Image 1: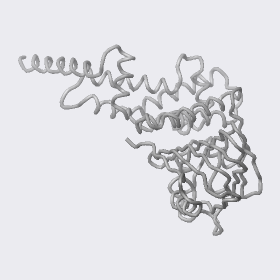
Image 2: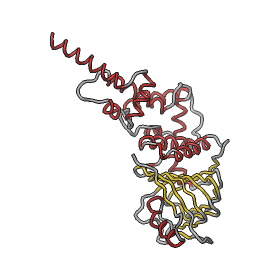
Image 3: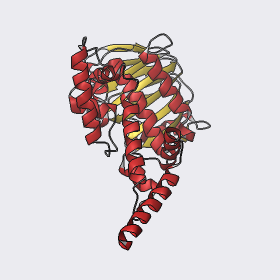
Image 4: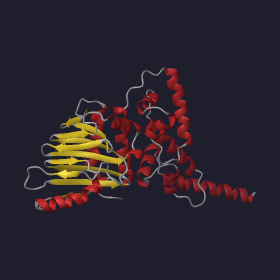
Length: 330
């Protein structure tokens, strides 16, 4: 399990703080060419976690200006998609096209590192942000970043955008208490919600068309249950539909796409555990069917079936051994 780390310029003279941030920044963000206007010291603090190639952070700073390095794109860096949630203060962001966006408290921005040009922290502010390679980002986020759109209101009353913002706040707050698997789940839930927010409605879908799509989606899920990467975003991409259309297909079924995937995996695990033979463990079975956290799997399994997976495994082995014994006796 990775752990949250905290870094700050507290106690450092201005010159040393600037040098320290120049060394630290490439680990956490694209390496902007930085200016620090009108301050006797540099106040900057960041609490963060890195998971594979994803970075999630809570950053507080005084006035700053960042510009794309003079040579152009960040040399050697892969294209990134970023999600920035401004909690306080004023931030001005500019694209290479010349468009400028003022980002106030309670507003989100989805941006692409190849299109970003510069930013100004106009007054002391605090932000939450996620960065991940463009190739790993959900399609809706990639498309929104490529549009180089404006600020997205995400305060209370903004619907799905407000829910996504709450998810990001909660995930960042719990950085010290999430396993790597739980952090991945929380980030995926945030991406799915924000993706639905950003994806334009695809128009009304007739009931027969929705029913037909639901059959196709459920079959796809069944065929790929053992894929650890199976999630709403990957299912929508495989079907060539938006996340919003996918969720609409499940509307009225009494379930969601995420819950359906989980329930089908749990039933596959129960079936396999109840027929166990050989040296398979509960963890082996759970991981084989797409679960990545054994403790979370055990809790979810007991909630679903009222028994622990280890007890089902024990009974399954007893029954298998008894059948084999009787067969040998015959």
